[in-house]
Length: 409
Image (tube, rainbow, N blue to C red; front, side, top):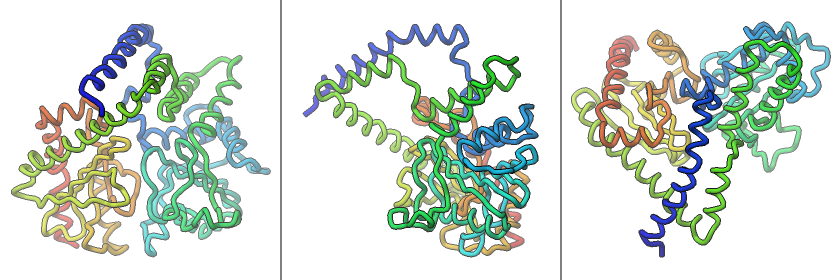
């Protein structure tokens, strides 16, 4: 059985490795080698506002990059293979393309992360997943849209960090039992197809005069390396070697579980001791754990007059992304006419975020609380008023609109 000394010795060894590499890191910082515009703005895992929009801009022949169809041509060769006589220069590219309200039992409607249209000849539909889980009937809705729009041909691409398969609840298809003809989508990844097509473009420009887009694409490739764990340095290799010695790996795993448990406890304590007080007079604070999504910790704030919706505060313990927004109440169905009316009013408050059957509208919290790190948890533990103030401001922003909507529904 591990003792306190065992844990301390392992920590000391890891800290020694980190200290020795600290000088290298400081040198890179001094020289500007560590700068990356995408990580600097703090939303490196933001599917909607970073990845989907940036990729859509690159793939657009009329995009501000000024490279015409160069990006799209390389991308199509990597992912679609046979593009025939399609006029790439006339392609239309959209990010967050609405295909109507979710309806027909969730089998139609929604938003396509990236849509590339070649008139009615061809369409490329891209579902972009960084850390978010699959939605009910999501890819099925996209296939139904493509069929209803009557594209002569189309390709649905399921884009993830590592190229894994979508879940059955998204596709309506049991992959293990399905024939090849029943698989109507293709899987691609950031680590392979996306990185490869961008690197091919970089390589094609090595001997040319480089425009502003060149270093931006280079930095985006570095971001891909980071989010797909392809960055390998001496520090990581030394720590890995250390963990393989004796029983260190088992010790580290126990420490990791302990840290994760502590983080969850900090979140729950904040909700019970701080958020509960804030909600006391005006809202009913509830929680409902989802067995299929155990990594999502949520608190709902509702009023009795809000029949169809409530405010939701959510922390994802996989990505540590933190959201706040309006969700559908579990105990009420909302018909296809009321939801668009509600969302129309909510969009006056903020930019619309990725449509989801359950979320009506959402946004990341501000500052250090958009994507939590160790410092965020420490602040919540010892200085909870800052986070409480941010949530209080959100309540003041949303509640009057939701109150007014409740009168008219």
